[in-house]
Length: 266
Image (spheres, rainbow, N blue to C red):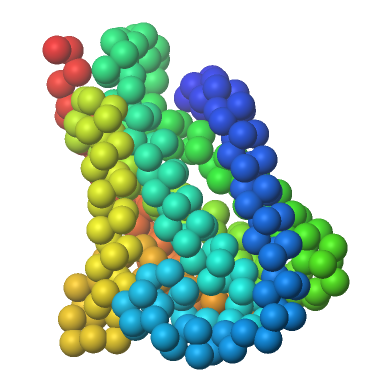
């Protein structure tokens, strides 16, 4: 199991590097825009209120004080890029974990090793954690450096907590793709399912928030992760974090059990 884990981590090295560089560039661009926007005298509160509530929930988050650098980062970076796009990305990558081996006819090479199918699933899943940790760790340092460069201040501890909890959120997102990877044998189909499920849950969460149908979005991972509350107010929804951990564990266990019973001899 450790050999498989190490192999998968090494194989993702270049992918991790490219993703990290891209995200650091995005951080630099977003933070670099803040001084000019803040100096323009734009009434951010009126700007936010001009959008329908559904759009505010989906793309702007729950931040009230958008004029601060923390609020700006949540609305322009974390809510869309980190919550939605990176959540989808890690689910997309995990969706190729098992389906890719089956479609590529390399699954037999794994199964002949003295390792149970459940351990293969766990190793595949855990091999994504270094990427998730590196991306969020480097992003934390990049945001601190970029904010300091433009002459602004941000609480490094709140920012660290935010990215640490993003590790949990992204790991939970990945397990959705892992389950899809076990359910179907074709990589593109599994990846399509992972993207569709994650985006649909995010959309349902945004559209039903503060409505009579709010319960419909209770399954969405994004319902239990409020980047604005963490970074701006310093509040952490610990029951929500626990929910994300439980979801990740349950989906890994279900994926492992399904793979144990799956016929891959075809």
